[in-house]
Length: 560
View 1: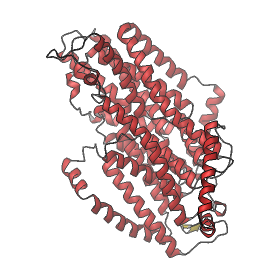
View 2 (view 1 turned 90 degrees about the vertical axis):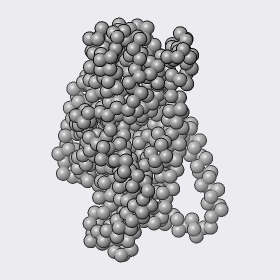
View 3 (view 1 turned 90 degrees about the horizontal axis):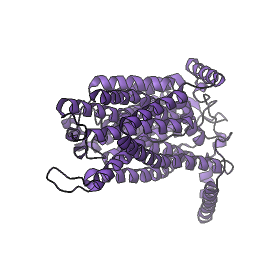
View 4 (view 1 turned 120 degrees about the vertical axis):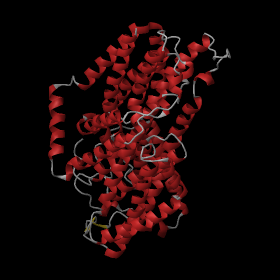
């Protein structure tokens, strides 16, 4: 009997590797799209910086958030057999769902996927236990609230709605203010973004870029401190208390010091904005790996620990041995974190599906016109009509001279983008810094924000504020945004329902259904990742190799 469970646990760990690959493919958009869209460096350079951030975040992560252990269910009331049913159903469902979304080139949330799969699986077992009259050790009848942590599920759902709305609105407002300050033509790196060659004053340009970059760098470093490193072993309780007690001194002093430094560097015609964007890419990649690693390996490693506890202390009956040990927090061995980091880095570099997901986000936020990926929809047409009506109403209220002045600040026709770039450095910096700040604020308030939701919606908000959505393209891009958001919510529903039924099937079908589910997962993974047409494989591999070897930064945005 133990051999069967050992085989299941080994499969869970193997499946975790595929989950890492699929998850990184899905979430690469979080930290790559801004740097790629602004063409701040060669594609290879951007990937290397992101890869270093991913590895650092994985290696310094605590490796396992309690959500995988007792964040959704109360394992003290679940037997070893029931826990294994839930965990196996979660992993099979997770890989299949994420692989489908990545194949379609649609970003989704690994956090929501894992949470709702755990919720669906645990709910299935909880219902069965309630039907049979589940009781505590003292004979007290248990309710659904005792078996499940419903508050976590509700907080995740609320976090989804709040993060989508807040990220979009905040991105739109911050980008509007930033564009009012900089316009589309400004001096940067000793060059100009204007077609007419007008450089602008060195002092005023350096001062604006210096202050902007100082605020950005301070925000990014703060994001790393309270979000990227919050679970690291380097962050002792004393250090955390010191940071919390001196928050405003750290922020104020950092902004002052970095603003002076960045102003001086900008005056020396050094690429300050490129540095900000690349630093932001590193920070988001590091925080992503540190915080989201549990989405990929939390369930398998928890299953491994449950098996070890059962073998060491169980009576031989998996139906009567309960998982009280999972009520405690666990610390993952460093070797597991390092191996996970290596897999994530390799996935980031070589994953073809990561390119499709990044392409979706960059295309929806690009400044210029072009072939749209999405068609029109009734919802998008309605939103565009309402937006036009609101715009006309505001125009009637505001004085003509003010409207004219604002229009001059948003004249993108005077801007000269580097060949192949989707937008400029200012928007790329706003995307990264604002996404990092929102996630950091959510973390400090203990809100379950998703990096995927925040980064994507910030990018959509900034592109709208930049007037990148013309009357011709707005309908198509809104359709794309609605499709992506809809995909996120479909993920939650599909994860819950599919895992609910799969857990029931495993519970009643025992090892036969478990074996069939394992075989199905393996078949789908092989078909999805290895059985491609020879022509399609040659085309994608040739294109990706060309990007990696290219010395031309234009390759950064021409990969799609």
